[in-house]
Image: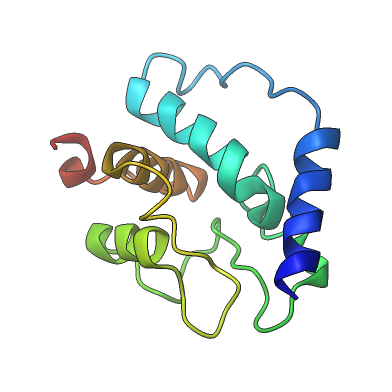
Length: 130
């Protein structure tokens, strides 16, 4: 199964179009711009570019469906430490990988902030102050 997921990610990364410039509402927010870069690079293949859970590899994954990050309720919690924890540690029993050993804490913090932005929520101040 890991080989299939890895192959899907490789194909997605090779065939995906270049990212468009950041949208106007975040262009002056360096934390969200950095988070968007990480999101598009690491998360969009499953969660989709808009966070709807409709990325190109999402349909072929076993287990629970990929999370829609634009939902009002997040199944693993919406407190900053919960969002950071999911990204850092992954989710047992789901295809959400642990990114903690692969990307920096600053990248985890910025992509967490971007997830809040995708959901239309205010970015918590604790994500901005480290």
